[in-house]
Image (tube, rainbow, N blue to C red; front, side):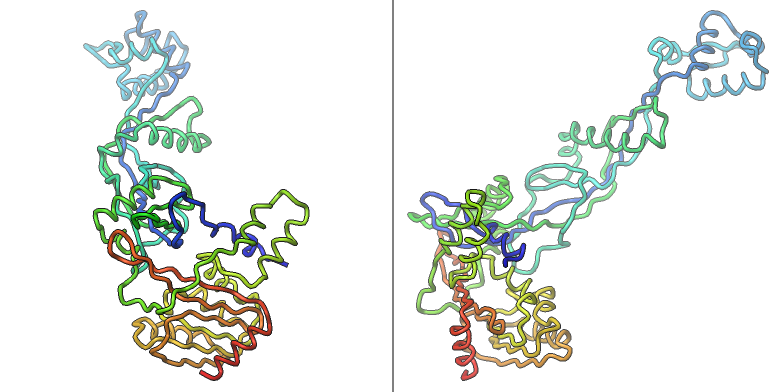
Length: 434
């Protein structure tokens, strides 16, 4: 029976692009900023009944505190507090011993509303610096910086006041919603609106990971991109920044020293598995059909290997074999924890001594292995990828090099998986003889 992560393999199926060959699926890191703004807030409040009555009395002739107190039947001390409040808000003033309306007081009395402009803060706003989108949604799953060697985009929309003021309507809507969410703590008759953006009070840069399908033109070896999120602005920015040879986009290409076998790697798609996904919802036994095609000997979709590694503890394998020319490219801490699960008794690693991060990965393995036996074997002939998880499954793959219009290569890992116990046993016997 398939687990949920196995049923979600369709996210790795590349869309078809006429005139182009699919090359690989890669992560690209998008710059986003969390910012805080110092702003002017325009606050509008309906004039209270008492204020309206007192201002009206002043307008029609009440000139002194005793007159107002007598007219409303209030002690002068109470009326003094009301008049003082009107004075502080500049609705009324004392002139030559008389209480008079100010121009603002006359205007407020006519509109029945009083308006204030106050300094305020608008925080935790996210700005996507490639699309220019502004949101108050919290940034989740971000990275402080792109992982070493991974492709990332530079900002398209610079973070400055000119840009932010061009997004005033969006920010005003966010500000209004944020104040409405706090009406329980405010006067219900009072509304607050964004009046002006004064300054950026803080900003914090981070990166969001997006996955991109990379294609090569069959005629001229130029590249095209389709992001899994469907955001065209990312594809346009990546193409433009590659053309300008910006470092972040240039990381799309692997180092020239990457080992590659002389014989071409098999480049295939698991067509039966893809066809089974396309039948979703069209037949009642879709799950059975998908399971049959999933567990067949087949090519892996680009990116599917990572899912298998993240969930390899589900195989409950007692013995695990790992071989890769660059261990850190395939193994991170989460995957290493899955490899050294409670069921694992032995892990064998074949690695390239020229892999500058191999010692670091092997060191992490030694810390995580607990009671598990760990054997590390250096070999200068490693150019392929191999994983064996007990008798559950085995994966073998090679890197295929693709020339591009940029005179740099893209490398695709072409891997196949088998669930056949006889083939897996044969592979283990071959590995034992290495």
